[in-house]
Amino acid sequence: MGEYLWYIPNTVEPGHRGDDAHEGWGTLEHSTELAHAVEDHGWAGALLGTGWGRPDTFTVAASLAARTTTFKPLIAIRPGYWHPANFASAAATLDQLSRGRVLVNIVSGLDDPGAYGDGEFDPSRRYDRTLEFLRLVRRLWSEEQVTFHGEHYRVDDSTVRPRPWGAEEGRHPRLYFGGASEAAEKVAAQEADVQLFWGEPLDGVAERIERLRGLSAGVERGHRPLEFGLRVTTVVRDTTEEAWLAAEEKVAHMARQGAHDPEARQRRTAVGQRRLLDLQERGEVLDSCLYTTPGRYGGGGAGTTWLVGSAQDVADALNRYRALGVTHFVLSDTPYREEIARVGDRLLPLLRQTEPGTTQPITRTEVPA
Image (cartoon, rainbow, N blue to C red; front, side, top):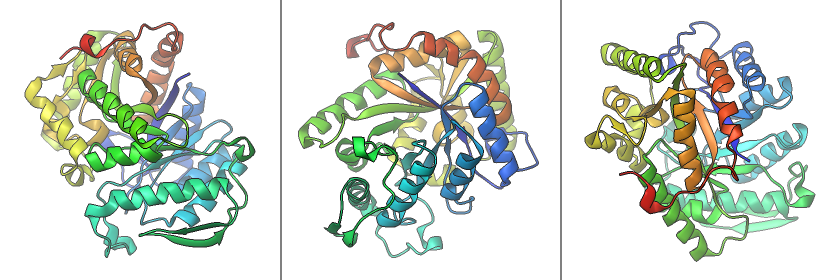
């Protein structure tokens, strides 16, 4: 079964990626409204953005979990901002209190570490530290009296109470992870549960899945096989023509005003972001409906490329990613509140009609260039 999540930007400033809601950002009422809409329109939960200068992501996630019944917060967190033992305890507690609804997105990309006291750390070694972080968190969720003396972290006789929900059956919060560099992929192959991709064409995703599966086999993972997810913007309208008109209007507005994505400049040095920006050289539209132009006008991260079309167009595109092995989808568009409903009501039923078992897997040679 697929996991279908939305995105809540978690910011105090209005206008994120063109969102037209001007009031309420940074308030519990506004975030709760979005979380309730997520529940009401068929989504399992939502990714909560992180970064210094935003509301603390874990605090927001805990507040939303208390005000919802099925909403799963995919909590973006950073090693360095968190010590692994503190995070393991906080996440296990929230997972227990919410009866197993916690999801975790480990972020190792560039941030402002000096602002929260992590300025002495060598950024070039951040993936070595992330690997230790993940290994120690896993042990703390499953073992008693953990002693761990690594290069970056140390604990002695540490036991987390309470355990995550369902820990007696070996369950723990699912660990999502991103990153396209060689160092990042080695971390994912060893310790992540889900590798998240941004909106690359099918051939690029197929190549990365093949490589990650090979890396995973080479390290003899001690847990379930690595799964794969897609984080992408989806512009959905009643017809193909209406969707492309809307997308082109959005891009024209970005060209006039500039994209409101304060992290875009930081991301441009990342391997994954450069891969997305380089796609513009291959054309404005790749595969069936992957629009690369937004990146030219300041779109960053998941806003760099968009899947554009009718609900059926976008469902067909996502099903081709699913045929490659992608089973987790984190989608979004703005205005966030309006698009939670539109995309949830029109796209999700089509995706659920074609869950694995009804789509025919495609091979590398069938992927369009």
